[in-house]
Image (cartoon, rainbow, N blue to C red; front, side):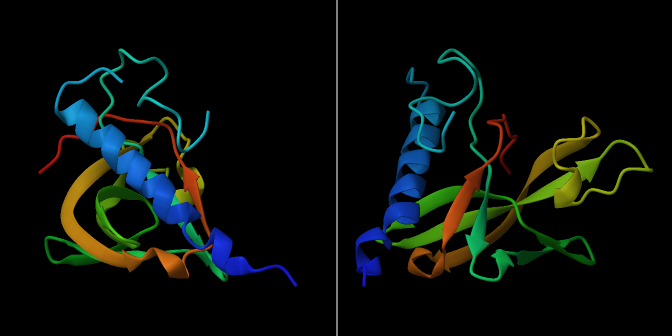
Length: 143
């Protein structure tokens, strides 16, 4: 039987690399997989975020966040900090410019859907996560 402990840190290591890339962009340093060496399609791009979704054994990881008086959930996150294998993730909100297109994950690649930063965060034990799927790099106005 294979020892699964050897792979427990892979999501943790990827998020650490994404966090480092995002911080390098924030510090104005120059910098298609989750751990590619720069944000955006080319190193000169102005992207500052590599949004992603996390996978658990029973599907995508979700977190709740508050938008005014409304309680919403999200499956899309931005890494803010990784300490050992505990990550602080910013909840990202999907927004639709078309009232006929729902701002849900299934519509993530519809041109009417955009991603916005929230001021809501979740702490995640990355040892409990099975996988990560990165989305297209973007520029977020961080709150």
